[in-house]
Image 1 (cartoon, rainbow, N blue to C red):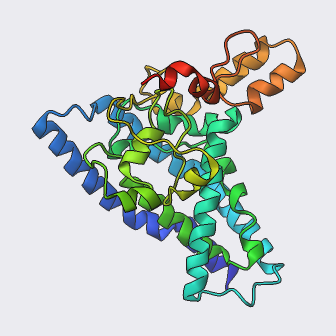
Image 2: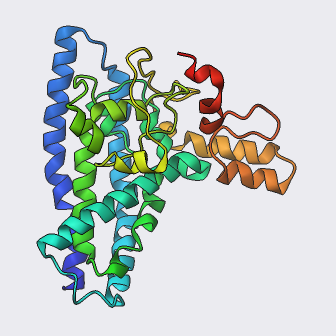
Length: 304
C-alpha cells in the first residue's frame, strides 16, 4: 500500500463525499413533506444551525483523521496478523463487528465523560428529530474519536479498510434520524439500530437518557445494559435537559466547554475540579446529582 496515495484517499473520504448529495436530497424530501403536511418536524433556524455544524465538523475533522490514519498505518505495520488478514470477505465481516463495537463504546463514553460530552453535545442540542439533525455532528468529538479504533489495526486490518467501514457505519446512521418511520418488524428492532431506538437516544426524558448508543447493531446496548425501548405512553422529548436558545453554529459547537470551565473555576477542591471534567454530565459538588443514571434510578421514572 502506497502511503501518500492512501493519505490522499482518506483525506477525501470518497464514500462520505458521495453520500452528502444523497443526504441533502432525502433531507429536502422530508422537509417538503413536513411543510406539506404541517407536521412541525423542522424549524428553519434549527436546520440552519445543523448545516452550519456540518461545515464546521468537516474542517475540524480533517487533521485528526489524517493523524489517525498515520497511527493506524504504524500499528498495522507492526501487527503479527498483517499478512494473514487481507480484504477477504470474512475479514470484512469481522471488521464490521469490530468497528460497530468500537463505535458503541466511543458513543457511550461521549455520554458518560463530560469532557467528551462537550464535543458530542451539539448533536443532541436540536429539539427536533429529522434528517437535518443527522447532519448536526459534534466537531469536538472528532478530536478524540479515533482513539477508540486504535486496537483494530493491531489485529491486522489495514487503515483504508477501516476507514471504509467507519464511513459505512456513519452513513447507516443517517436514516435513523426521523419521526416518519414507525417501529419496524420485531426481528429488525431486536438486532439493528432503528429510528425508534434512535428517537430514544435523542430524548431528554429521564427514562431515555444515555440509552441506545448503537451505530448499526442494537445488540451492544442489549448486552451492556444501555437499552431502552420507545414507549407509546411516553413520547420522546428531544433536546437537552437544559436546552440552549442559540442557533449560532460556533456557540452550539463550543458552549459545553465553557460550562465545564465555569464549573471547574467555582470548585475549591482539585478532586472536584477533576470530577467536573471526567464524571458524567450532571454531577455537581454543591447541588443535586443530575447524572442520567441517577435520574433513571428515580422510582418516579418508572411509575407507569
